[in-house]
Length: 404
Image 1 (spheres, rainbow, N blue to C red):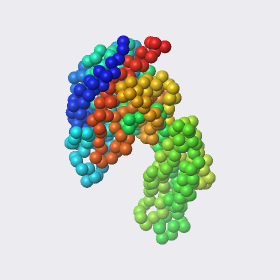
Image 2 (image 1 turned 120 degrees about the vertical axis):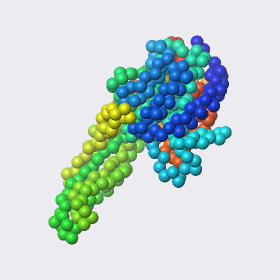
Image 3 (image 1 turned 120 degrees about the horizontal axis):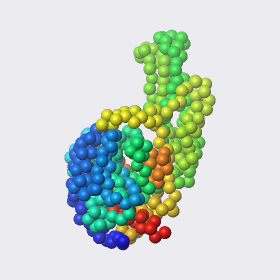
Image 4 (image 1 turned 180 degrees about the vertical axis):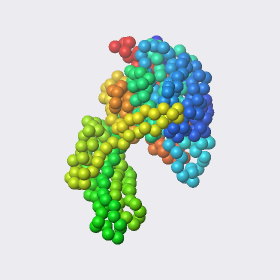
């Protein structure tokens, strides 16, 4: 079966008002991590309206919508949670009102990542309307808790729901490029203990904050000599938080710990990153503890799926079938060759491919610099382009397999 690319793009343009209205509805629903119940219900209603063949909500609260019943399972993902709006004085318009003009739709989560969800749902409708179903099943997921623990939702989908697609398209904003990888990350705690004493006689105690000082200096130095990869770049390290305990402001601190954000390039493992810190002379001298943080907060359903805060890097080759499918889709729809690059930030791909080696690729509506910013916005034409892409990717992929 051949694809009429012009017809797909024309239908995506036809559905732009409906996608925009759906997007505005999602923006109007506060959906910070742990509070996604209402937006999940709204998405379920739109999937039903679009003619999805099956819609499930799993125990964690992720929504799973299916189009088609073929043997090749292909997934597309958008997280439905947002960060908070921050200082409302920094917003020109109410972040939950979904202000729009002829070019943009404004509001919290438009680019990160409700736009991806709107485009996926209407891609499903385009597939249904044009009869593009072949020997594939398209799984559209709206996932929870990504902003606080990226990939946890897909750890659950793969490990507990027992779902393993042939590949997953991550619809995070990609600034019009195809994204084939990202650095991983870790959340590490470095802790030193001291002994309290009255601040008037500090020599009788052991100041944990002073003990931390040389560790901070060596952590900064370590960050300058980390491994580099030609595609993903150099690993990074920064101290992002500092904490202490003390009986009072008039006492010697008896404990101090810092949070380290460690970005991992290709080939760096959790064990490597932990040992690099453990082996610093200042860490050994202070007998500091170096451990990963854990995440164990409940989803909106009350379900807890604990995990270590380790999120592996991932990438696929540019000549991989999945990457070439998206390049082909873009080229045929828009008559130009897309740029292929990586993401600087982290996505659910850390679980999909980083932990479980399921090929992952990225293409999503929106500009990367809009994520987590006041006056967040999404261009209307991005919705159209993404919906057209998502509608043809499954068929192009299965046609390639069939013709090989």
